[in-house]
Image (cartoon, rainbow, N blue to C red; front, side):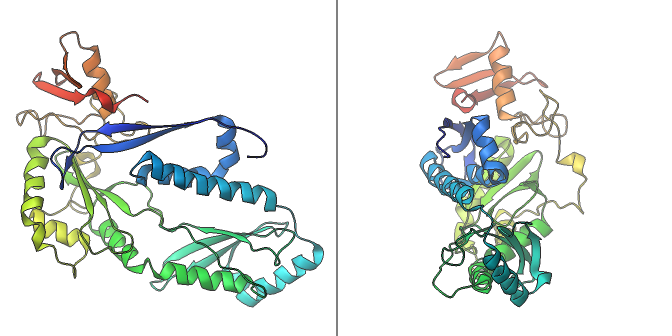
Length: 356
């Protein structure tokens, strides 16, 4: 990129979680390291990189997403040349045709414009358009926060209005998905993401007792059964996992995901109206912080006398380091065993979760 080479390291951490569909599978978390020079080149695109890092299920799928982002950034570097004066006048005319009230932001050199676009449900979106000196002969580079990247179709005679129309058409396919996600956001306590953007199709929902459920909604079939992972103490999540497996045939494709989960699990998810933040946003008992490298504490001692309410949850990495430091800890195959910081009962953690 720009005749520069940068080193990127992508590693995979395995987190031991309860899964609704597999008794033995663990969830994988990708960890990314890159040189500061590349971070500077990516700039605002680092948000997209981090979002894709969280949602990708494998190193291979993330690499494909990263390549798309890097190609987009490289294209922007070559295209961010101010258009000619006659082209700028044509751009002004095209913007006037759309309406200046739709302009979210405009670069002084007219090589970048952001348009505010509403979907069918009146949700607000922004499509960013890069215009180079050869516009409209060469197509603009477009991007927006959607679960599937927006790909512009371009031909002679097209204008910025065609960009808006195609983006509106692109948004239409995600209406049901966003309805499902909005329902989750409004009627449960979402732990992650802390700030939901429209390109994310996953939610981590608080269950209570320092436990949560990670739900990955199918993008193009959002009423179908999602990928589900339970996180927290086995004493709490294993009964829920068993219930989900046993009652999965009751899934109703006419009902939103959150209501289906409540019906099948026979629980009511806590909301910000029914609980206070301190009951869910509890700091790690080891590092005394809530977020560590973007992660929240989700591991709780399995001793029923320890939790709740006496115990606090742990970050996975903190518990790993704690158990490694205890002289009495022992290791069997790839699992560390040691004492809980609160009750002294046996705690354990797979050794392959932590370091990249």
